[in-house]
Image 1: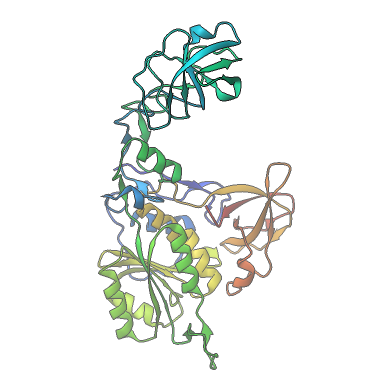
Image 2: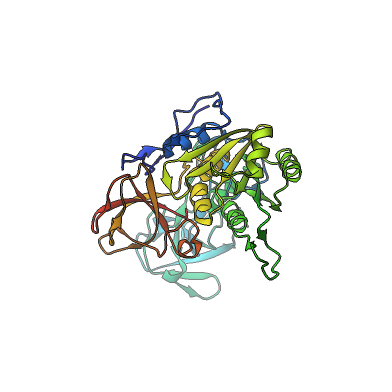
Length: 438
């Protein structure tokens, strides 16, 4: 199995450089210990997660269901496109030899529409009226556009512009020849790719299927029924956000709703989910200092690793397997949940679906406002807006409040600025950013 190592601006705590987000891929799965208190560099956490998530086994799907999926095998053309020589314009099929001197009058001996053919062989002094896409008549080697013609009576045409052989003619196989490598494995099937596959009669491409992902939020304090809040309650938002993120990513989402703080119920929900999905994403209950039913249950039934990652926000993160199904345990604070998903879960889920580009697009931008921070051993991930200026470069500004609970400002962000450990980035300096779309 071959693997592509994706480059991205995800530095470890001490370096603001472009680093590999994935490891040198190994076939074996990592040995996941149950608890781990030490601080983990972001790149180490990404490597661990990615190395434990392999592409799903390929399946054949109908072409009508293939949009957005990733090819699991090269596609080699078995047919030529177009299948026959045809006209690129409406006009008159002619012999170029008859067009040496213009204007010239020719006899119109037939008419051919797209989808029709003619057996009439064009002779000297003859023309055939032809519509765009129609096969070239025998004996014709050029087409004069209808704009360069004047009809003379019912059966003659006056042509006022000379043409050379091949003019306005699309040759057989001009686009695709049998044996052409059209697409490599790992190609995302976008609309234009769909059209090419249809044109060469690939009706059931071999693809990596969509990842089926179960999503849940945990906590007795969460409500989503629209009723007035009682003391201590908050409205659920993380699961709503994660469902949308997963849907945008191209996953098949199974929404498990809110699971109360009851160990038996959580265990039942997780075990049932693991029997029918490819991955599980949960929100809440992963902080090192918490006693939470999530940790109690997953620590008992799954092979988990509880991490403190050297980033801010989104320091707590959990990853492991339940009956072989990857589990991504995201923090409960809304911004932390979003950042953890973008930095850790998203690349792994894309890998499971066969993508070659695992991370969101990343660029080096200009900081129009200084980013102040102090050394603390962490990479700071600051939510920013992005504008492209006349200098051809991305320019960024921080959005509002940056607290891990303050999602309203984050909702306005276009990207995450990656600030390595240190004293920040002054205004006018360069800063690496990771886009929140694409």
